[in-house]
Amino acid sequence: MVGPRKRHIRLGGIGAVLVTALIGCGGGSGATPTGSGGGGTPKTDITIGIDIPFHPIFDYLEAKSDQYFAGKPYTVHWKVLDATTQVPAFGAGQLDVMTTPPSFIPRVKDSYGIDAAEFFPLARWTIGPQLLVPVDSPYSSLSDLQGKHVAIPPLKTRFGAEEAAVLAQTHQNIRSYFNLEETDAAAQELTLGRVDGAIVEAPTTYPLLQSGKFKAIWSVHDAFWQAFGDPAVVNGGFIATLSFIHNNQSFIKDLIAAAQDVWNKYQADPASVNSVASQISGIPAAQLAVVGQVLDLSSMPASERRITPQDVNTWKQIFPLLAQSGFIKNTPTNVAQLFVVSP
Image (cartoon, rainbow, N blue to C red; front, side, top):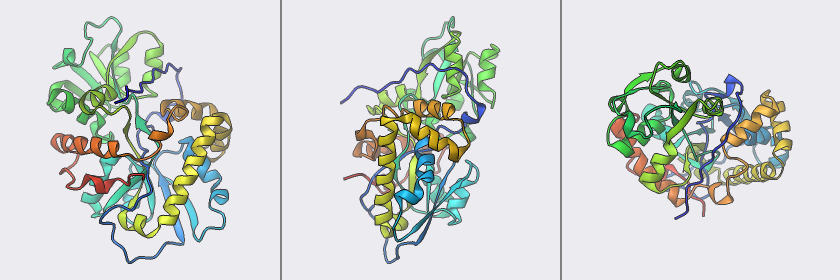
C-alpha cells in the first residue's frame, strides 16, 4: 500500500469564477463494460459536454480537436454547460459524453433510466474539502467539533463527498453530527467568527490558509484514506452510456489517447497548454495554472490517469454511505458496471 499523496498548496486569492467548478470531473479506461448491450452502430456525430469551462486538459483537447480526430469516421462537437444543465442535457440525449463524479451516475439512472459508466479520470481527491478553524481554536480534530457550529456550502450543491466522509469516520450523518449551517457564504461565516469551523474546498481554502489566520484540521482525503486506504479517490471524469461505450469503442480509445497525450504535454510544459486552453475558455492562463495545481495535474502519476480496480473497490464502499446519507436513493447493485477499468 502506498502512502497518501497529500498536497499542501498555499496560493493567493483567485477569481470567484473558480470556486464552484473544481469538483466535477474524473474517470478512465478502455475495456467494454459488462451489460453494455449491443446491436447499435457507431455514431458519426459525437457531442461531449463539460460542466466546468476551465479544466486545462479538456480545453486544450477542444482547441486541438481537429488535430486529434482528423481523418476519423466521426465528427466531435463540444458543449460547455453548468452543473444544473449538463445532466438534464445528457438525460435528454443531447450529449454522448459528459464529465461528472461517480456519485452522480446512480442519480442519472434514477432520473432518466440511463445505465452509464465512467471511463477516464480528469480529477482525484488528493485533499478534497477541508475543515478549517481559526489558528487559535481549541478544536484540533473532527471529533472535537461534534455538536459545534460548522458552516458548509449547501449540500444539495455538492457531490456527496463530505456526507460520505463524515459518515465513514463517525458513523453519523453530517447534518446531525454538527450543528450544521448550510450557506453559500461558509468561508465568510468562518472569517467573521460566526461559526466554530467551516468545510470548504480549494480554491476557497487557499486565501484562508495563506492568511495564517486559519488551519485545516481534517479533510475528505483524510477520512477516505483512513476508511478505504485509497490515496487518491477518483472524483469525476468522462462518462457515457454503456451502449454508447459498447458501440463506439474506436472513439473511446481515441478520446482516451488524446486526453493522455494532452496530459503528457501538460506535465512537460503546463504554460503552453494553459495558453491554448485560455483561448478556448476565456479564463486567464494564470488562473488555469491555479486550477492545474488544485487538481494536481502536473503531479498526477500515470498510474492514476486511468480507472483502476482500486477505484471500483473504493466506490463499492462509498456508494452505500451515499445511500445511507440520502445523497442517492439506493446503493448500485453492480458497481463494477459503473466503471470501465483499464486493462
